[in-house]
Length: 343
Ligand code: MG
Image (cartoon, rainbow, N blue to C red; front, top):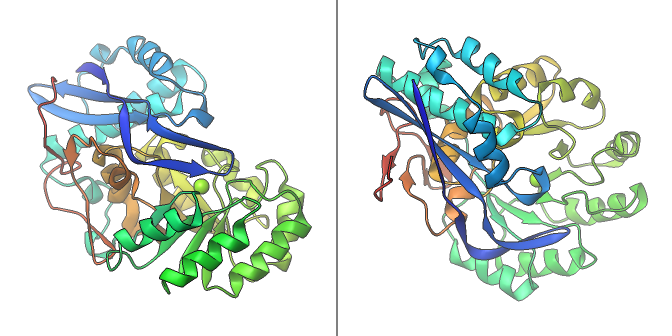
């Protein structure tokens, strides 16, 4: 097997604001694993808060020796090896995991969802994310996608949350997911905001407070009429066990957790603990978004819109139809290139 990679910075269609910072581009590296003329594609997307960069991903990938493996279907062996090379580097590891699943599906002639025994017709609805901005700009972004989604995700965690929700409700009656991105300072403030949100048809709230304040979040959960999901508080499978009783559910993202193999484990661990699951993403191309979508029939709902937020997506894969994720039946991830990738 041969590994190659290509830095591919993503251009965002709109500047993207979350509690704490705003950006207009995301560093990204595309990966290709080739075996006997068949190519699998993967991707590492690196939002600043995860601490990876084009340099760190390139350095990690430069140390990976896939030439020692002759059978690409030995995913457990290969991915145990890449995971053991260095700690961290989760996005870089995810890029290899995604490319390997794409390759395995292509070699077997089946879509990746079939590797996991999943029914593509059970793929859930996806939210569309509205980043923090001036309320009038957020209203405009909502109008641009009118009729295309069944659920919108609103980024909050600012001192203008009430004003933002009021503005959002002037232009849409869709149910809302809210992501506070750790922005509320204490149980008092968070609980006050949640009461206001509950009256505005908010159906879930992601990461209300700082990721390590688990005792406070557990107290908040007792007061909250809306289910709370962990995002920043959960990265890999081992993190889930301490979240029982703290959150109602977890947001699983391939770039945080090292890819599809670990995401599948997390879905099953959370389910076995009676917790809800969702799949999320970073701003990333249709490659990684489609990889996450392959697992989506196993989760309650998805926030897989990262590909829709960028202007230079080189792939086509999963589609959104009437707000629902629609997977095709092509082998592997089912990607098509829509530009000339040089590998
Ligand atoms: Mg989040």
